[in-house]
Length: 344
Image 1 (cartoon, rainbow, N blue to C red):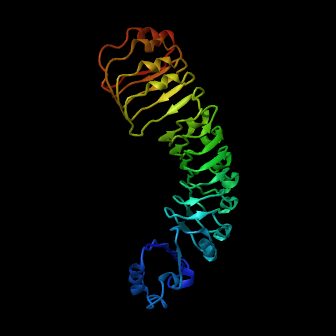
Image 2: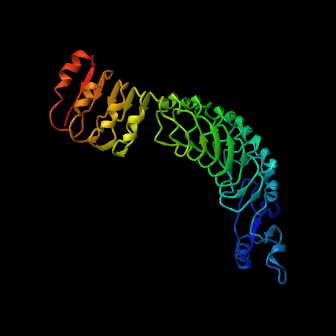
Image 3: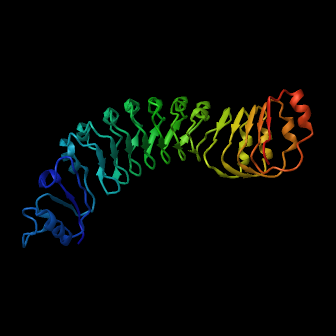
């Protein structure tokens, strides 16, 4: 019969305290093979059940209990802690708060419950914290903003609730934020614009409301933004800059719903197809830069009816046909400052 076993390195004393090994061991032959390499006293004694060997704990339900993790609190110099994708149950033990030098703390893919401990926000060296695909409840601790080095935070597929804390954007170093499939409420804090290097935001399948903040236009490194199945609105977005990202495909017609959009900057991608007429619904557009893509077709005549448009850059595409005659009047009458058509 297969059992799930826990090797307690502290009790075995066969590795240094800076090392930690979790293993899923299925049967006695596997343990004997390890014993052949490590020569652990008391292992392989004839007539004894391997669950009684020194340092082995077996759980007939094939699930670690987190009480076993409490022994790890003495590893004061531990920097990387990854127990993901086991079947750990229970709460994240408070004893682990003594691991103050942790830089990478990963407990994802288990059956952990309870809330995210407040002390996680006291791990000042933490760069990575993942606790996704568990059964965690409660709010995301506000003091995570005290972790000035935090770069990656993934907490998706839990039962977390409450708002997204403003504090987690305070340091400006956050690069990846994944909070999908929870019960989060409120809106996205304006402070998100402080994280210039934030490349990936996934907050879909929550109960978020209100509007996407204008400050998200300041997140120059943003390449992936997922917010489906919420109650969010982009109607107040004024700047959308997705330049130089290697995007392919056509411009989605939904962009025409951004009625307050003033700048749409998509240069240096691999976008193709015709310039969508839906863009013409953005009556407040001041700057439209579609240069260095693979657009084809003709320039829509109605683009000249966009009275607030001052910068139109369409160079380095595959557009054809005539330049709209109205553009001659537009440049002088409406006050266009830049009309760049370049090579086609």
